[in-house]
Length: 450
Ligand code: TRP
Image (cartoon, rainbow, N blue to C red; front, side):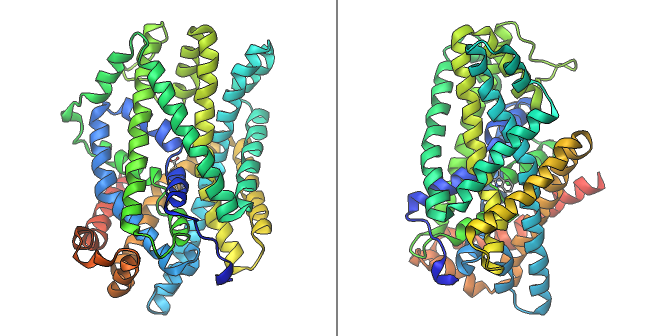
């Protein structure tokens, strides 16, 4: 199988694919709404800290194991294990990662489907199909199901194309579009009355709010979700990096792009809220906090677009296309984690693996759609609040304590000869051995014990 393994064609190909994975609804929806409800710049500040100090080292752990093993997460963790016990733990961790990635995709696909539906609504309004437009934006089982199916099919088609013809090709097309739409929208929104007040709220920190434990927990969770950590997606993308590349600098690039896009998205969403307020839309809830989460994206922003007349149609369409693109380059990375396992370990062709795994995940999504009230939030909580940080911790332990330190160094030195004398090698091993596990455990203990 090894000879037939895919590899990204270039440094840029990897950067576009991995930043496509990282940049998703977590950046354009999650980050701004968390910032909105956690004191704007206070959250931004803590997020930057968590992303650089904890998420970047954990990302490096995944990329390095992946490139070393040139395999999916299960095979990779078995390979770096030193004895029967750790190999067994590696297998369990790998499976837990694959299952978590699949469950994350199961709810992400539903949310991404809403984005497609909301992109369609302005078009329906333009042609006078108001009934269709209100069906698209109204919550309902049929709508949720139809658009989830469309989104899952797109994800599956891209992944069945493989590393270069699927992941890299589509990430290279979609990521530049994402950036252009995002920057265009920001440039436009900042010219509108009210926007500058939003910029102030977003950029002037109220430091008193930064050092609140719940805010730190949220910032860490957000950083882990945003960098797609813990479930083997970055590990498998890492396994497609050539040995010629400097992996530490690649990881740094992905982290910077991910943070940069989140910060930019905040420059769009928060000023847009204040423009909405200027236009008479309510943006504070009963307790005086900024409206956040789903109401922000699916009620406040559409209400803003409605006040903008003909321009609002174009802006609304562009905004939800942006969301759809962001979601798609992320969902393919989630699907790649289980698909690469089925493909490499069970010897099914890539196409068959992609269709088999997508079908299974789509069945789970369908179950969630029809039991929305009971399952949706539950699945999100279990996967992103518990499984993901826990698995992130396990991966740090594997790299910091189980895998042989010399082998780790050898892997980093491929493509980075001076690694041993670098700052990276002076600091990162300490992080991965001590700082990350202790920090994740602290946050985790706090969450579990309440
Ligand atoms: N990082 C993506 C976002 O910000 C989502 C994502 C892609 C993800 N792959 C993942 C999240 C794996 C958790 C695990 O939206």
